Image (tube, rainbow, N blue to C red; front, side, top):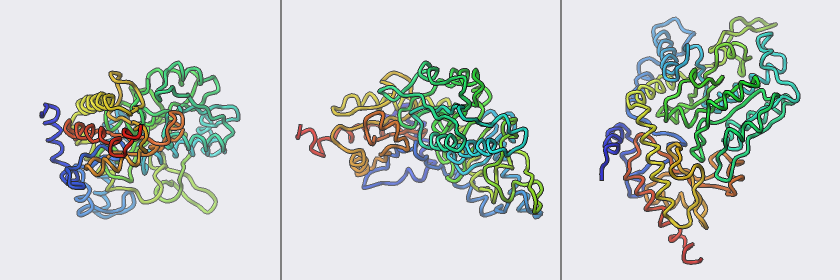
Amino acid sequence: MITGTDSRSALFRADFPSLQQEVNGHPLAYLDSGATAQRPVQVLDAERTFLETTNAAVHRGAHTLAALATEAYEDARETVARFIGAGSADEVVWTENATDALNLIAYGIGNATLGRGGPAAARLVLEAGDEIVVTEAEHHANLVPWQELALRTGATFRYVPVRDDGTWTVDDAASVITARTRILAFAHVSNVTGFVAPVDELVELGHRVGALVVLDACQSAPHRAIDVQALGVDFVAFSGHKMLGPTGIGVLWGRPELLDALPPFRTGGSMISTVSMDETTYLPAPQRFEAGTQPVSQTVALAEAIRYLDAAGLGWVQEHEERLAQKMLAGLAAIPGIRTVGPPLGVPRSGLVSFDVDGVHAHDVGQFLDAEGIAVRVGHHCAQPLHRRLGVTATTRASTYLYTTDDEVDRFLAATAEVRGYFGVERAR
């Protein structure tokens, strides 16, 4: 049966060349958008057209192509700023990806603690005994940089423990956050459980004690409307390739006064004001954080991806994906030997579901599904502490996007129901 929302997904699918192929003799059912999304032809064309007609280095040439490339580069920054509700395009910093953006913050604060950045950076300095707080549910990109910052500054690294299903509450966070907390970093949406963090309450808790609040929006910005000013956070990071854009481009948004105070992470060309053999001064944000030759075609493609998402309507995207996630949860609950993690059936979650198949390793589950033309993610999803807490070394994750249909979910559920039988687990027990 084709539903109304399925017919809309079918319209989108026509824009994605990668989804028109067969894999192992079956139509591709791509349920791995949580790892990276496919790109519509509009995004592919935008990047190719730029490379064919406008390619040049930005902010350094006097010729026509250089001027056009610079204009496209900065227009893309304006597009991102509007997309996330930033007050100014100068609040948007281009990075390689979200991991790079989070490292930029952490290493910038580390540099401030080492005395770099002058008086403005004093507000960012960490002292021994200050606390950095994350949650046990973070993926490594929003965990390891903060561990390293704690080691380099003498700050204390703490985390909000998760419950048996991988979720946590505001009360759990409140029990860890103290008057010494200076940084509170957490994912808006978990890439393993689909749990949606209570951002408003966390911001209130963090700001009450004077902490900087860092939001990892890798799994939210592509799937739901976010307004960085309304959220009240201090920094936001996300990647382009998870939201129909190319790899090699990410975004860091920061409050302007904080970006101005943050010492640069990378140094070199394109980010300097003056250089002598004795000293260097740096440009204001955002250029001070964009050392070297910039990823111009990637920013152009990301801007086109954002226009595509705007046209699709993120409100519909969120509703569509969350409905499919509930359908996957209900279907998996009916299959013997399946344990899902995250919020239970009926409780809101994002459009992904991770699960463990009793007696079958996740890699075998992934290979079995791949033979049916169904692409899912397997492993620890760069979240080893969370998997360790859940008592599993790996899970299988099915994640959706605006091009995912009910038929694909039905195929996924039907194939997953055959996994244990195929590997002889049901017969052996």
